[in-house]
Image (cartoon, rainbow, N blue to C red; front, side, top):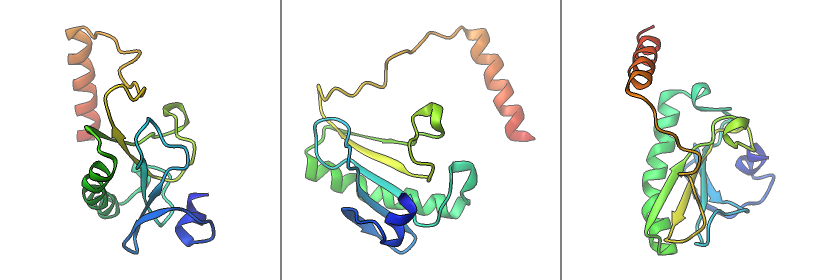
Length: 136
């Protein structure tokens, strides 16, 4: 579906298009404020690991422009920029995209649920495992 939006086959409420990156309003916006925007490369990429660094940087540059515009239009007190990477994380469309979600107090969006305390030993071990993968 997102590839068809990018190509113009399917209409969307576009707010940004620089030839490589497109942004449009989410048809099922989160929260109570207007302006929930999706930002993505026009070329199909399934996720962050499938995206070249320069293309991902172009997405981030677009997000940097879009955030203040969404904040001003929506009157948001805050903004969430997030990526649901994979089905288990809530991704519904397998095309790399980021959500720019305007936030206000009491908007009903909760990301802090199901958090846990982690022991120092677990944190240390996990940090070392991740660092080892980054070196390899």
